[in-house]
Amino acid sequence: MDFSGQVQRYPQALQRLHITACPALSALPESICELAVLQRLVLHGCSSLTALTMNIGNLAALRVLIISDCGSLTTLPHSIGQLAALVKLHVKDCEALNELPDSIGQLAALRIFWICGCNLSTLPDSIGQLAALKTFYVRNCERLTALPQSIGQMSALEDLEVKDCNALALLPDSMGQLSALQELEVRGCGALPALPESIGQMAALRKLEVEDCVELTALPQSIGQLRLLEILTIGQCGSLATLPDSLGQLQTLWVLKISECGGLTALPDSISHLAALEALFIEKCGGLTTLPDAIGQLRALEKLEVEECGGLTALPASIGQLEALETLSIQGCGGIIALPDSIGKLASLEELFIEKCGGLMTLPDSIGELATLRELKVKDCEGLTALPDSTGQLPALQHVDITGTRCTINMRGCLIVCQ
Image (cartoon, rainbow, N blue to C red; front, side):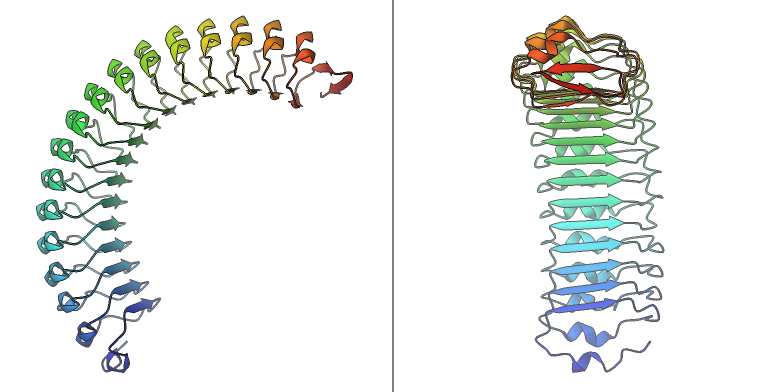
């Protein structure tokens, strides 16, 4: 497709230009660089486009450049570094793109940078010069083996996501220098054996997600130094055998989620020191056989969910000390045959969900002491034939679901039967 002469018909005041789904377009006209006030340029679905105009750096007003689904694009022009006003750069699903120009580090105003679905094996060291960058996403770059050491120089970076980079085997120690970083997500990096010990130096970090890193065997002890961390998610890390004792030092942590970590056999007792923890989710950790007795010391805990932990045989009696607990959910834990009597001491409990616990034979009589309980759900627990009589005395109870059991309940003179 020949675009020559067409740009001249565009008004000189043009601020946005989208070129979408032009599979025959093989080149952009040089005259596009004469659009002096152009602020946004989007190139999408131009599968024959092999290069951008060499003088794209002349677009002095350009603030947003989005290039996506341009499968024949092999390089970006050196002049891209001259885009002094550029704030957002997205390069996505350009499978033939195998390098970025060093000049990319000259983008002094760049705040958001996404590089996704490209054939990159390295990133240029100059990337560390992006002093204004706040958001950096690297996704689905399957040949990328490491991030450059220079990444630690990104003094303004607040949000870093590294996702589905299967060859990535190293995160640099320099990441600890990211003093402004608030969110870090590492996901789908199957070759990554460890996180850098320097992670504890990320003084501003509030959210850490590590998921689908199957070679990860441990978390660094320095994680306990993350004084502002509020949310910690660890999932699909099958080789992870332990959690560090330093976990208990996270005094601002209010959400902890651990899922699909089959090699994990226990949680550290130090978890009891998580004074701000409000929500604890433990899911699909088949190697987990017990919860620590110290869990009862989590005075701020409002929500506890334990799901599909087939090796778990009991809940600790200390669970009755969770004075702030409002929701307790036990699902898919076939090894649990009884709940502790102390459950009746949960003075704030409003929701009790028990599902697919085939080994559960009885519920404790103390359940009738749950004065604030509004919803009781006991589903698909085929071993359970009756609920305790005390259940009918629950003063706040509004909803009962006992489907998939052989239980009956008499409550305020109303008989509910589900078989």
